[in-house]
Length: 589
Image 1 (cartoon, rainbow, N blue to C red):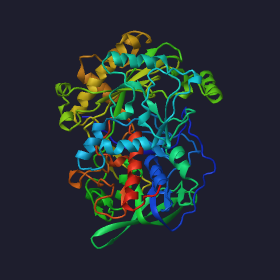
Image 2: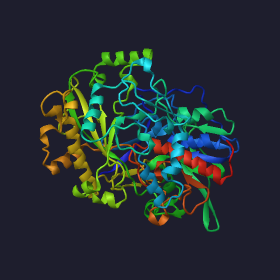
Image 3: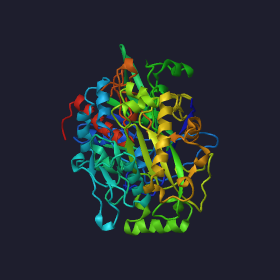
Image 4: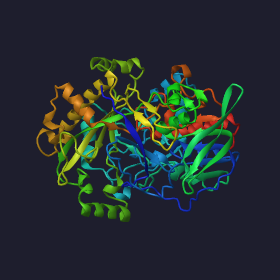
């Protein structure tokens, strides 16, 4: 089985071809001694909660964020010899650095959340929150962008802070990929975001009308910055939850944080609740270093237990991905590969974008995708019947993505990309991975990154899905709609190419393992489930067995939606804020 361990690398927000809009004049707050609510983490969900909790003016809220104001843009470099998982560090969190794609997933996934012990989380309950949080920007027809398969259902969006749009520039190979998928029985659909994610089309993205990034920073936080009851302190990582025990139940009373510009540690208190929103890796880490977690983790570093819950940091789930790569003719209409090696082309594309708002810089490389649902019969036939038995039969099972470049970057054991060649990549991601990993401590400080064990492919069904999706990638590549653009033998396929035969499942799986990377959709490490079933939080996102503590982020997800998760995480932020306001009798707008 395929098992490896990774170390978390939290990078500063890094530059991308589609930039975020800066907010001028944001200042680090002067922190008071006490607030009604403290939000530990100013990321995707945390800033949604901050916006909604300060709407009525009833509550005083403090946001503490480890990273910078996103006007700071920096690259990160991997540490030699380590395998790294990256995460967003800065106001906006991973919504500032992700791949833009916005989706919601299949309605049945949320209905399964409810059936597993979470009343109020069915599709009927959460769909209005998806609508509330978004608004759609129709394409600017004057720019001359290809509008093929850029349909949408206007009733699926409201007038919310998060802006949704289609990428501008569309390579010819992207259209060809969708046509090849349709020919392979993955139907063209109108809109993924109405509760049925099965099909293929241009993917919706978190982009504003100028095709600049939209995020929780420039959507939700910008709206709230002028409110006197909101303080935001960046460069202020939360180091520990403060708690006391009066009687049988502990209560979280505040946090200890580090003020990086001064290098000093401070305490701040919450009269009502601390809301942890630090993501799938660092939310459980914060709980554990503060004395909440599995006994083995607390004992390992002699951390005094406040509350033992064996589920904290367990049940890590992610969508892993792998790709096959093919050569195409050297033409920007087919591949964006040359932008990474030809400075003249890159400079011209940048100038076109900044001057006219057109050209390749108006598009990420991979916002074209299709979602495939396999029949229950086929799932059992290929050895993935456990997917059906887990209740995941009625949803999408595999995502296929088109990348107009070599993805992921760097050579594979099968081929080294050359700077004078152009490539496309077809990528597959299982939406129903049954393997589960975990988060472990490497020390008692939040300054020490946790150890992350994703445990990919440790369940036999995950191997079966991977092999099945590999065959389908080749089927899509071989269809004339797409193969006519490729260059060379074997439909242009260079990785793995002829080194892996279709009938050699062991060789296929070896290729998959050698080329698997995370899809950056980690979740589930503080699951919203009954405690006896592996839960850490209840349906109102309150941590079991302790007062004054909630978790509002992707770590609470009990069943990973069949989609990239930024859309669901925005919804979780909306839902969490709604629950908190209800519990504290805040009905104002």
